[in-house]
Amino acid sequence: MFFLFISGTEISKIPGLSAAGANPDVVPLTSPADADVIRFGFPKAIDCFPMDPEGHPTPAIITRAAIIEADIPVCVVRAGSYLPPAPPYVETGAAFGGDPTLGPSVPEARNIFEASKHLAQNITSHTDMVMLGESIPGGTTTALLALRALGVDGMVSSGGPANPIDLKERILRDSFARLGIKSGDLADQPMRVVEELGDPMQASVLGFISGLAPNVELILAGGTQMIAVAALLQKMDPSRRPLIATTKYVAQDISSSFNELTASLGLQTYIAPLDFSNSAHVGLRDYERGYVKEGVGAGGSVLYAQRLGVSVEAVIERTNSLYSQFADKNS
Image (cartoon, rainbow, N blue to C red; front, side):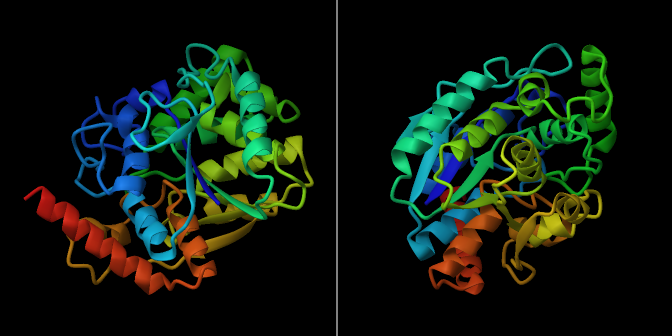
């Protein structure tokens, strides 16, 4: 089953940090909009289609294409999003994340963890594989903070071709200064890392994983954000060895350390071989130029579809069709 965890964090409001939306005021609301897109094809939480500042569509359009083509079962988990999504969802009771430069970003992380653990225990008893995806603007920055606090070196990816590395590093320095720590100082305190520096998605996904039976196959659908989850998980439960499923756009991102990070942590990966270079839509063709890259479990959804006998080409074709429908609706 595919679970999408939607969350929010105050740092997504910092100008220039997140490429999740064209309107900075709407950026924090894109995660419930993503949930709407994978269910309905168009958002109901907001009155515009989730786009980056240059007009490139949310990767939720790829996830929806895979879900339609392969009839993938989906459950949306609200884990601190600013607004609830329109489709049915389950609630963890989490609040959106705070700014780690000012104070603990997820002070209720342990409560979120326990609520998500209980959720997994109740809804996955007859499941042999779970795929966990996420949508949280600003999440690559909280991923960076978590990785460095654990002592894991490397750079996270970004939703645009210009990774705002200097801004992310400044947030990291200010957050570490607040705590009086340096890289690696919290290596043996993963839950404190989430409380002080992380986001509610991390707390919720980690709790959910803890509630799974030991024989359940675990796939984390995402890029460097899910690598941070996997790094935290290794400190909590080294017996869990998740597969990281992402897109080629993240794996080929020269501004990030996806391949180095997964190798250093001993993580197996699946890289979805998407190719929109022949798309009729510039918004999709530009994925090949480093825009958007990943999110909403896009790469993982392609893997899920393949396991159910659907080709990557079918997912690409459906994605193009969905974009055409969106374009017609807004013309």
